[in-house]
Image 1 (cartoon, one colour):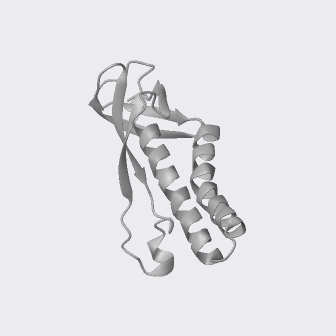
Image 2 (cartoon, one colour; image 1 turned 120 degrees about the vertical axis):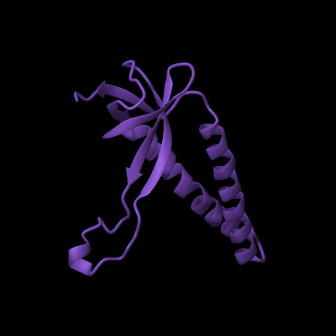
Image 3 (tube, one colour; image 1 turned 90 degrees about the vertical axis):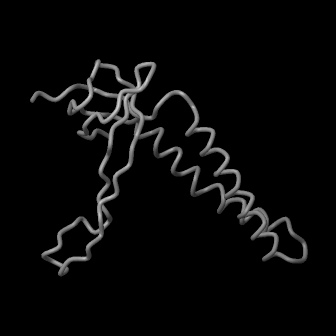
Length: 132
């Protein structure tokens, strides 16, 4: 997956920060639905600067779709899987076992997210600098 963004900050060790605008699910076609006022979300992402981009440069960034989809599927599937495991292995209070399994799954995903977020290698890299 590729996106065009602007470099907003230069960090250490060949890493830059960019701002990515994520539109809401409505697509902002306000004429068709009389307008909802949903703001687009702006997120800041650390990106590996492989082409020597400078502050203010418009660049094309790329992420590994396989890696992003793997993380997303893990995030959603682990709590659901542990919910079913908790339901099956609990002999008497199955709803309680399912709730505990789900909570353990969510906790595990939160811890994993913090580990992935604190790692040094960004999920994105700069492919090229756009011409001005």
